[in-house]
Image 1 (cartoon, rainbow, N blue to C red):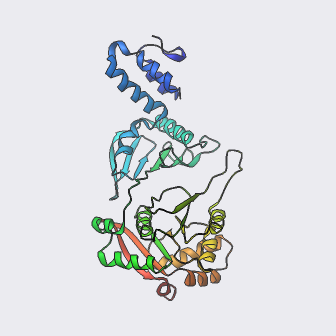
Image 2 (image 1 turned 90 degrees about the vertical axis):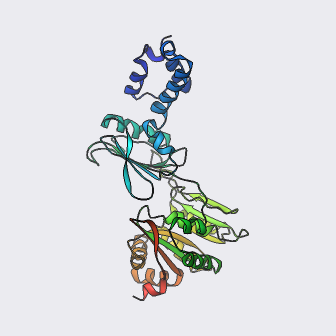
Length: 352
């Protein structure tokens, strides 16, 4: 049997991969069956899976993405693959290939995310069908070929007791956070990349009474919240014509019209800080969010800087933060994994 597209024989699959083709699933099956004489029925099924993975899926990344302990997958331009299991980055036992293969993978993943990635648009942020967060950059913005980063969602509902079991926090801290939620305190969870901010915030939200309504605003859907009345709003990038963008600050305004008992911003990193602070200071108690910071003491300055991006005067932002935020919970990742380093009242930080 001749393979589709004028290809035949044992070289057909490799030629399809070399071309970067994206044939239909029936086409993949036909190509695999073209090898049936030497492969046999079981081999055909295995080869069909390999082709589907290489042509329309994750290719050599499939086994590492399937590993439930992996939270981040990083592909360098030379094809080396690195993973993070929560305890630091380590080399994975797979390679993508050469720089041409990496670029082909990046372009294909961008397409799966409904995004464009080419010389005219050399970077992309998007969401893959399985919920993984994609970021990819092409040369000349990055040296050594295309680079791909995947943040893998692990939709495991963890409560504070689970996190105590992992060593992220102790029983006393867990109880303090439960009380903060019960008393409708406004909380900012801070830390660096990969410190577990989203994980901890989701565990805290699991403590919210079931009769309360949570409005969760995110740039990319990452947080898995075990609560029966959670409404999720997600921002949207502009399309290839430059229209259709929906920003986080607009979503916060929309969320406030949806009768939230708790307003949550998954990651505060731009002008949405103005809308969040205004909400927390006008009767929307118990709201929370995460922010990137190196220490709890840096959080007021970080929020002040974000307020400046939103057109707020520094002294106004400082006063709003002091009134709006009750507690800062700071996380750090060290040799023993991710841990809560500090729980500090915002009033103590602003007064330093």
